[in-house]
Amino acid sequence: MRPLCVRTFWWLLALVCLVVLPVRAAFGATWSLVALSGGLALLLAWHLFSLAQLLDWQDGPLDAPLPRGRGIWEIAFAGLHRRVRLRLGQQRSLSETLDRFMRAFQALPDGVIAFDRNQHIEWINARAEVHFALSALTDRGQALTNLIRQPDFVAYLESGRFDEPLIYRDGRVEGLVLMLQVIPYGDDHRLMVSRDITQIERLETMRRDFIANVSHELKTPLTVVAGFSEMLVDGYEEYSDAEVRHYLSLICEQNGRMQRLIQDLLTLSALESGGGLAGEERIEIEPMLRSLLDEARALSGGKHELTLAVETPSALAGCASELRSAFGNLVGNAVRYTPPGGRIDLVWRVRQGAGEFAVADTGIGIAAQHVPRLTERFYRVDRSRSRETGGTGLGLAIVKHVLTRHQATLEIESEPGKGSRFTARFPASRLLA
Image 1 (tube, rainbow, N blue to C red):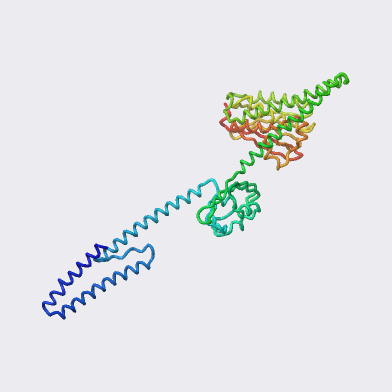
Image 2 (cartoon, one colour; image 1 turned 45 degrees about the vertical axis):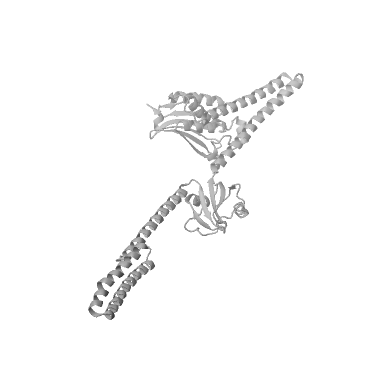
């Protein structure tokens, strides 16, 4: 304010010196007063004009430029311009910070919904839109409990107790399991964070099923072994030689079943450890498949028609023991699940640069809903039949892991009553000249 006061003083002094005093000397005091009044009127008019410019700018658009002034108004407008420039800079900085903040929320792997004390949605990120099948454009301002009416969710929000997260199932997206945590902030505002734990839940379910299945698979043969062993120990003399041999053969059979189960578990554990291949080598396909064909014929006992066709003599780079185990499981399953009189075809061929080993049978087939889960540990379409055939429920899980370690894939085609076709497809990089 001090420069403005000084500038005004000098304007008034100049008016007196340049106008009033000469007029007084020439025409007298009356005319000097008239000149002074006129000068002051002009000065007032100039100030009113500049003030009007300032008021027009104040009432105009926010981005309108400041008017240009003269004299003390030039100083005033320059000060205002500086303050406006600083404020615009601050607003731009805040806007950029807010924009970065919002982009960070959008980039989060978790869903985020901000809502008020009346549960009206204020903001929602893209991940939350997916988690709850909502839209940031159309659902903003809507009550959260009107859009998501799952009873546990509504009760959780209305309880106001958010110390523990909520496991949210059976929501608007089928099959999705979320962990929700509400975080109060500010004045009656809340932030809800949603995390997709579907895969974690699935793995936990598989872990529980695995423990239960292993326990069950070992319990049955152990019960048989223990029962017959106690019978023979307590009253060996009461049984004939034929009965003793029969009971001992059952003990040996169940013992073999447990050994196969433990061996498969050890194999699967080694494959799942994530280490590299035990040792890559050149594997001639035809000798391996002919050996597997002989084993399959022995397992079949002449009950099936088995054929082998090697359309393109080839060699693979990989671990021979692992691939033999995987191929053997595919062939063994085909024999076990094909009724007597059925046909089993083993085929190796190279198509479009990729190697394919296919096992096709005319067996009982598999319903479509079971196919995606066939490679899970201990998953069985028919548990009773699997035990009758001596399967451990781990064969296809081993196949899947072996093929994955060799960058190969397993394709399954099946139709109940018509048979199945299992195809192991290897990339061109695994084929050797």
